[in-house]
Amino acid sequence: MKKRLLLLATAALLCGCSAGSHQNGASSYLSPNIVDDSSESVLPFDDYYPEIKPDTPVLTYLGRRDLKSSDALSLYKKTFAADYSESETLIREYCSEYRLADALSEKISSDRSPDLTDKLPNSYPYLMSKNYYEDLTQYLDRSAPQWEEYAPYIEYYSYNGNHFFYPETVTAAPRFLVYCKERFSTLGITDPEKLFYENKWTRTEFVSAARTFCGAMGGVGVYGDYITDGFISASGETVFAKSENGQLVCNLNGAKITEVFDFLKNELSEKMNTENFTGYDKIINGRAAFLLIDDKGYEELLKIDSGKTYGVVPIPRSDESDIYYCAASCDGFLVPKGAKNVKGAACFINCGRITARQAEAEETDSVLAKMRANGLTAVPEENYCFNSETNTVIAAYLGSPLAQNEDSPVDISAIETAIAEINSLN
Image 1 (cartoon, rainbow, N blue to C red):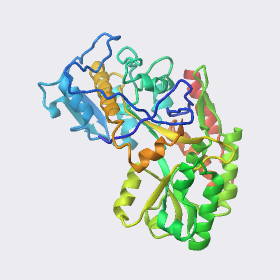
Image 2 (cartoon, rainbow, N blue to C red):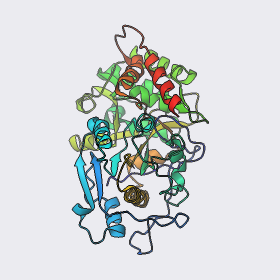
Image 3 (cartoon, rainbow, N blue to C red):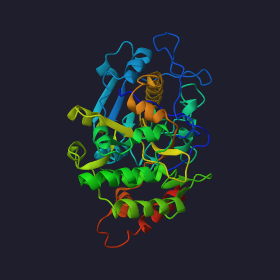
Image 4 (cartoon, rainbow, N blue to C red):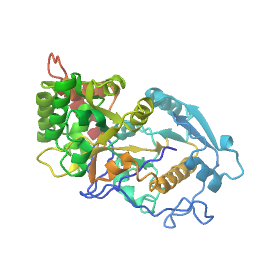
């Protein structure tokens, strides 16, 4: 299981098409009370709910993960399936993310639903509106110690009053900027990490560093995937919001996103080059000032180019803001509609959250942990939460501020239609 530091969620959660977290100003991290899962008294369910057990210890899973020897499976097996082997306890059928929604539809319609499946970017609200998942409200207690900090996420993901998704982990700044410290120092560019920890890491400083770098080295100021998405999150805005009555709202024409689009077009697209991710060569060979990357990519970069020191900073804040906003991502499992062992699946999800909570205090001194603990306020970001056609339109629209040859404006009527359809069903 990948160890991740988790954000504290509060009732003032900023809502969008993916649950996010937020905390006012000072710190975005928990100092959790560690649960000792070696104690025989530790059970996966809180006393406020009737203690439930799986109808059978055996679970079926359809998804892309290899859960063998995971902490969640170990706790589930110890608690509910001590007499079963690991392979007997969890029967896995691999399915790529690209194929998963179609595979689930086929299995649900033929009464062969697995007990567990992965969360997809469009699980909320699109697949929930298509009746893909089981409601877990009666099985998982949001007020239990392992869930209470995530209650706003669970509520955010509710649809028609049902609670389908209980996130196992929430990660702040799932993508961040990296740069080569040695090159910045040689060029006399103020270290962005120093600026960030002194609360001076702003868009102006970012643009200055990138333009100085490009003036001396050529290449691009920043490259990577989802650049526009990241800057929208850094403004504290969400592409989609959830109103108090549970309806989806589109913010693409709002003041904040319009301002971000103007910044990207005027400062990045027209004054320095930007590109989508094309590998690590540019950042390694000095042909890019910054790379927007995720945890996995960062680890790969360090392995490939271990001789250099790479700094890590979030996307800069607006010069007019005092808050470092960032994106947040949620990860976990859902129970497909028609699953034969819903209780067992809920038990497994609960075990996953318990073991993840135990891991929250680990690796607190890492570079990424320190960045994420330095007062980040996270907002939801996963914007591709409809069908594939609508998501293509969203991607094109969000990429338009950085497009070098934009022939015509992107028609967002498909997005408006998708929102209206979802709202009509909720």
